[in-house]
View: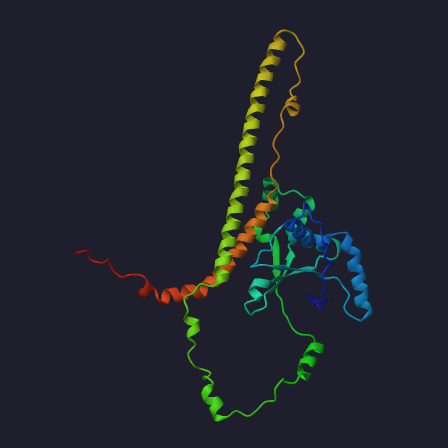
Length: 322
């Protein structure tokens, strides 16, 4: 529900899953995942979505479509499927629709990780044209930081759920504490030695691996773009040589009082390579930034501990040799 400058999300429902038939006796996991990622903009799910909203309206529930949600693993959500789905919603329904991203890995550590994103107006205009070449990006000034806009998110329980929680009674009746129980219970301010462990957070290691994979993919895209420039320079050199040759032929034909040959035949003889789409580079750069922020957050606590015990880990001087 859209109230003023606040967008309220009260309910959600999943799209139906489609079981693909096995090919050669094996299930194609990549095809299934791609089909699930494209479910929000699939035509088959449009009727299902309209029917679900109608059912919600019949039971007096907010029945306005304000966006979609997806799950991610350690912030791995900046990809073409996410952008295409959000562009579909902002273009077809409402420009204020949002995408909720639930990070299951970070939520499993005890804190709910839920974020809201929306495509920026600059990216919406660029994606409408469908051109992400170097020239178009320089003209529009679009950067990878301008693709997604993160929105502030406030999570709270509904009044009905809050009332239900207040009606719940404890499973065991509360008993007054005894002296024995007080002696066996540690003091509230007792030292917590578990916080001094030097073990590295497993999420930090996994995020670092994902960061390296994204950097490698980024270098692959850059190599493809450099290969395009080399091919373009090679073809342009051929065209220049052909034009000079044709110019010399026409000069000799003029002296021989013959009709000159056309100068635009190079468009039929040579084919310039097509520039690769730069959108993949922008999305990959945005994903690298996402991983870098997560590594910075995970490494903050570990770095502090390492500096605290640096004197015991690094030798102060070189050992003497006898």
